[in-house]
Structures are given as C-alpha cells and as structure tokens.
Amino acid sequence: MGAPHHNVTDTFHHFARQLAEAVGSPWAFLLALIVVVVWLASGSTFHYSDTWQLVINTGTTIVTFLMVFLIQNTQNRDAKAIHLKLDELIRGVTGARNRLIDLEEMSEAELDDLQRQFAKFRRQR
Image 1 (cartoon, rainbow, N blue to C red):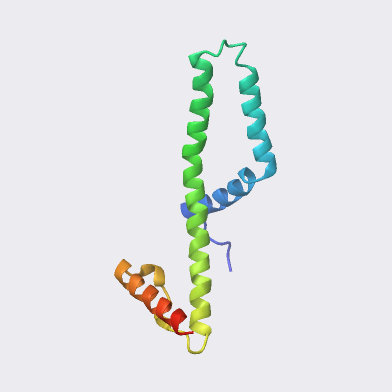
Image 2 (spheres, rainbow, N blue to C red):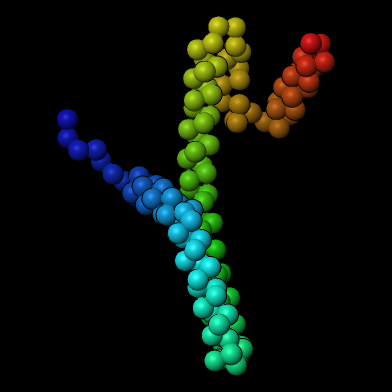
C-alpha cells in the first residue's frame, strides 16, 4: 500500500495538534511571561507611550485571534473522537439503547426529552 494521502485538513490538523502541544507547555508560558516582563521593563525607556502600549495590545490580539482557530480545531477533533468512542461502547453493550448513538445530532427538544427520561430513571432508583 502507498503512502497515505494528506489533504489540507489533515495537514492543518497535524500542524494544529503539534502547535497546541507546544503552546500548552510550561515553556511557552514562561516565554510569554518573559515577553510581558521585558515589555513592562521597557516602558520607562519608551516613556510609557501609546506606541509602547500598542505593541503589546497588537501582539496579544494577533496571538489570541490565531489561537482561537487552533483551539477550536483541536477541541472539535477531540470531541469527535470521544463521541465515536462512546458510540462504539453504546453499540457494543447489550441492553444499551442504540438510539443514544449520534446523540449530538438530536434536536434540543429530543435532548430535553431524553434528559427528563434520565431524571425520572434517577428518581426511581
């Protein structure tokens, strides 16, 4: 069999997963802390000017904007994997209601009804 085909989504996921691990590390936090301390220490040199403030505001805004997409990608993939694992457990357990598979695709009304059923079940125990 040949090498697996990597499309844009797979490439982005691989990049996002590696970057998420890197920026979630203690070293990344330490680096961010050092940047803030250096920025604070440089304030007197730049007379606490509007430009000095703009540097940190712009930098943090850009990083935050990009991190939103990175975090959303990793959370979406993790949630999908967890749902698939739970679906497999439901499918494999005798007596489990297969109706609970793909629960995330149900309407709000269906989820509310199911929640009431479970609440009733808990009260009966």
